[in-house]
Image (cartoon, rainbow, N blue to C red; front, side, top):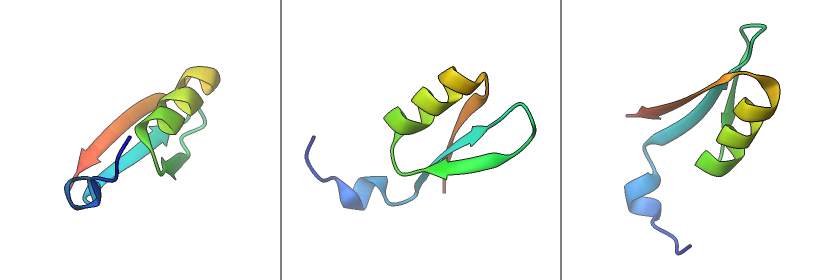
Length: 47
């Protein structure tokens, strides 16, 4: 995994949890892991 900072700068990895809270994660892998373990949904937002 190299640094593709320019390309990734505008991507936000969010997880919406069952209790309606939203958290942002620095990487897609962390966000998907959190979503899977909590039953939440993973959202990728491109700005």
